Length: 314
Image (cartoon, rainbow, N blue to C red; front, side, top):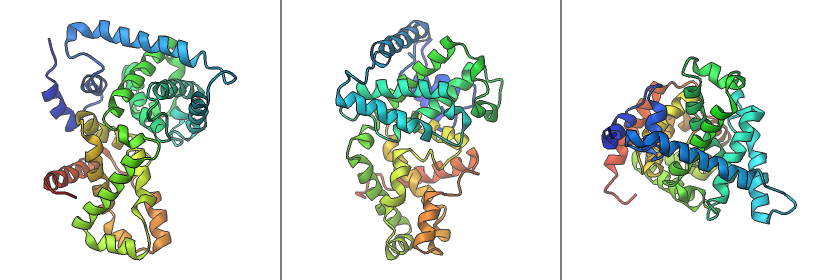
C-alpha cells in the first residue's frame, strides 16, 4: 500500500483533523515513506540516526574546546529558548527546553551555510505540539497539552521519538525556505518589499497612509516572515495555517499573500491611526482571539491573490 501524496497534499491544504495531522505532515515532508511496508523500519532508522547525532555532537559539546561557530550557536539557542512561545507553559518546561536545544543545535551544525538564527526556535513548536498530542493518544484537549502537565507521563523513549520527528520534519520544512534564514536575511527583506508592492496594488490608500506617517513595512513585517506569523496567531490557527504550508513546497512565497490578507483585514483600523498607534497595533495585532475558521478566510483570500498575481512581475 502506497500513499497517494498528490491527493494527500490536496486534502492537507484544505485542513487536517487532529487524528490524521501527525502522519500527514510526516508523509508530505518526506520523513515517513509513502510505502506503508517500509515505514516502521525507515522511521526507526531515522530516529536512531538522530539519537546518535545527539550523542556525538550535542552531548559531547565542550565550551572550552568548541570553536567560535559552535560556541555562538550553542549559546544563542540557549538565550532564545525562554523566548519560545512564552505564553504557553509547555514551551517553558526545562524538559522541553532541553529537547529544543538539541534539535536546534543539531540543525545548526548541519546547516553551516545559514546556521541558527532567531526565529527558527519558534518553527519547531507546531511540530512539537502535534507530535506530543499524538504521543498522549489524543486523549486530552489543546489546553491540557499546552499546560505541559502531561510531560511527566511520557517515557524518555516516547519523548525521544517526538524530538527526533520534530528535528526531521523541521529540517525538511526549512529546505523550502532556506533564504529566509541566511545571515543577512536577504530572503526576508525581498519578501517584505514584495508585500508592500502587493498591498499597493490592492489598497494603495493604506500604503499612502503608512508612508505619510513614516511607517516602514520592515518595522512590523520582518517578524511576520521570520516566525511565519506564529507570534501573531494562536496555536490552533498556526496548525491550520501549517496544514497549507506543509502541503505546499512553495509555502515561503505563498506566505507573502497570507501576510497581505492579515494586514488588509485591519486596513480601516490602520487608516484611522497615527504613527505611534500604528506601530503598537502592528506589533501586537488583535489576532490571538481568532479561531481556525478565520484562517480559512485568510487562506482563501491569499490563494485568490496568489493566483491573480501569479503571472505579473510584482
